[in-house]
Length: 308
Image (cartoon, rainbow, N blue to C red; front, side):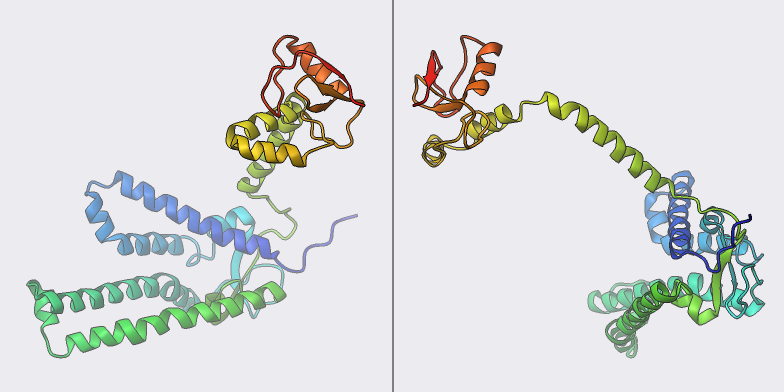
């Protein structure tokens, strides 16, 4: 009996595809910066252009030719027209592809460059620097335009999309369609490349499971070998002053000095006057018969007897 094909794309596939695209873009940017012949200052200066170039190249060889992005290929998803409700891909229209380029590549680059230009004009007007930017900053209209952009336009251009993106994400969690605000505006959505393929788990989650399992097995093996009572006593003696230890001893009447259990099992009293479980003190003497220190007062225990 064949399995039923999924009627929609899992939300986690869509989110993972976008996250993988961002990580791949970051890796390519770092590799491009490593192999470039220019200095790090040059790369920092033209960082927005490098990011736009990389996004443009990925767009050209994925969205423009109706192919999945690198992250989409790993998560078995590809862009399709939202008006098409089938399980398979419906190629995007030419205007949707160009609008995708403008919204995801050109607009972020333009916003960064306009903000940098406005800040430079404002600083150039204040410092009176030379050059063509300084000459432009000394124009009568330049400072007011830069101030308007930085204090009015740019905050609205960033906050309004952020609020709309948050609302869109809530709708996406409910419906599972349009994972970003740009997809909703362009009328595109992610569909499966192969609806019959099983979901591939991201490597980072598999690594987390493997690390957690290994850590759990290590702790299960090591923990029984650690004398937690002695470790607690050692830390307590080293960290707390003697006055506090005496007050703790006074409030710990009826508890074993080694394991801290109350009531004690077969209570015994040492020659220093403190009480312990018979088996706790006996095990300590078996390990080191002539050098057992009292955890309460640090005196050497020479003998003990049953508590009355």
